[in-house]
Length: 120
Image 1 (cartoon, rainbow, N blue to C red):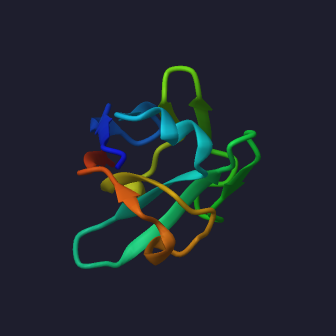
Image 2 (tube, rainbow, N blue to C red):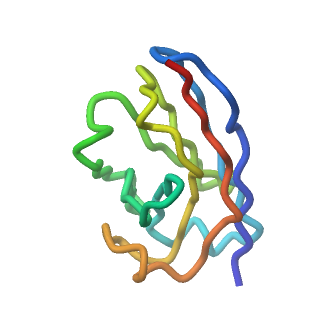
């Protein structure tokens, strides 16, 4: 069992930056592929980025070039550096582990989410 806890969300103006973090409770996290998803009010979950154990990333088209996913397998943490934020990036952001997919249904473990709000 892996327990995930996100942090780092908040309110930022358009064009600003935020760094989200996800802390995992178990070392098994370091053996799993991981990802970030987001969900805006009234919308379904949207793939943001994913990362293999060895560090190969993949990004959703809407965040490519602005967001960077990274991990520290010694600390069991996953980060998402978000630059050039836009109001349409406003959503609850979730970290997930246990699959390497753009499909949220594939993931076994989820955090509780952290809210990101981008003002115009």
